[in-house]
Image 1 (cartoon, rainbow over the protein chains, first blue to last red):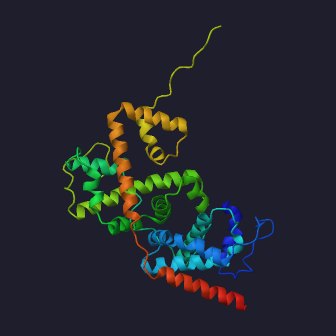
Image 2: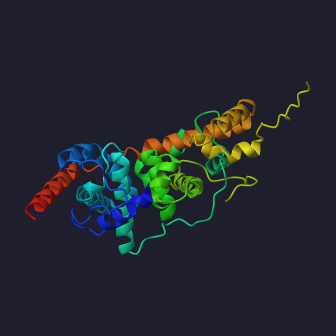
Image 3: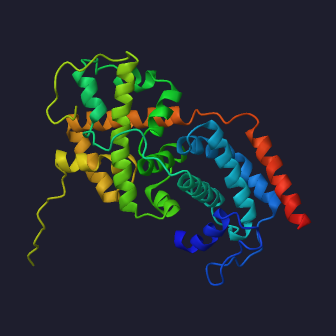
Length: 229
Length: 92
């Protein structure tokens, strides 16, 4: 699916006007009338809050996130001819959103996130909670992650290196299945799986550090075999 | 007629179950694999505790990450930008 979209996406990303952004013959040209702009707007508006939540975890700050959603909306309007009526509008629009992000990101030189790539162990958070002597008979997740502010959790996600952050953002905010993430990003599903797996561990590590900083949990008293410090 | 039954090997160990932790929580396993993980969790309290913890972390993260509110005027600005773009397009 994605490779059919590439010529179109390239044109859209280049800001090519609507007419010139038309499909390359033989590259999946729509066999039905293009979506009416009013109908486009009707379908787009309910998606904007989620698009913004996604953009906020891709872009550097709120202003960049707002620009990203607006650019994606305008590019989608210009590229209406690429949308096949009856297919998944949300997937189509979010693909444009991610393409806009990558395009803008590359212009700005990209970033590698603020976290190192070293892996955290499996069950990182649980092992740290156990080490801290927390009451496991209660609700240790509510007592740790649950006490962090939503903005702090969001900041932790934004600190992941880009390739992990993008996949984790789609997963957590859009609740996307592995195959949908793979299709949107044009990467193998196995790559999605491994990035998500590693990204989750990195996120747990960051959340634990935050919980320590906030004084929500005690410092680790003893080392747990197999656990990464 | 003699039946040769295949040995019953379709039980996951703790290690095999742990390897499928994320995929199980995300329902990305085949139905047979889902069933085998479930069977293991029903008989292994240690693995069941670990899976329950991870599931709870995921639920908590999803809940927090989805609370982000869009700026109140963003939709209006986008709708205005779209209207301007349509006008520009029709003028060309």
